[in-house]
Image (cartoon, rainbow, N blue to C red; front, side, top):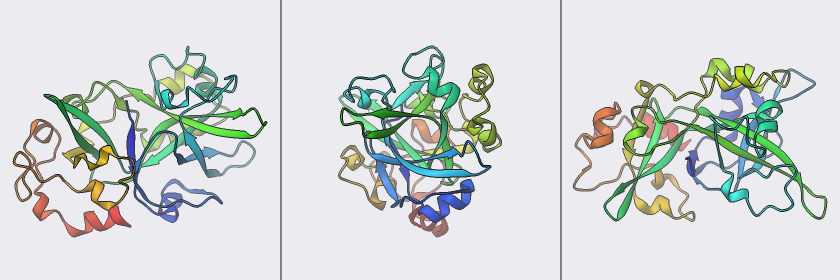
Length: 260
């Protein structure tokens, strides 16, 4: 599953990267959690332009009587989304991009869990495959929500978790967002594990476990006896993940890009 992620770029950079625009503001986030407002990108159904909007993370089906199940709907399994009542209409008619520049997963180590940060290349922007939905609360107020599609893990993420979020190839963005594309089989073909060779991972501090911690320190590599700053990240994940970079010698521009 994907229960926490990062979008540390400013709104302007997100809009430029995804060729989109929107009126709602966005503050860089380092520890995005379920039920919080998150930016999504949708295709305008009448005009050839992409729009950025803020919606609640945790999908509420349009037919739901209440919002109690939203926290359980932050992810949708790509293998079954086409047949599940909560997701099948959204997969066919309401798809979106969910921008990010990192996500977190936890690896069980005895009685504890070690969090890891996963990135594409050196922390560049990417998009999760997302679904969105519109729901009306008892007061008839419209609430827009979303869910991140997941798939089987690639060689990198499998060392930590048995699922990973679907990261879309940029070449698929137009087709994924196209409101006229209602062929579920065609869109489902895009929901594959991302190329592990284009990703990296590293351990981060357990402070990411607490939602209140939402600052640049969340992305700092964790300094521990096993992953000591100044040495290569040669743990289970590091050896298989193109992460033999030296934290102490990390190029300054990489950090600056993430903190913009």
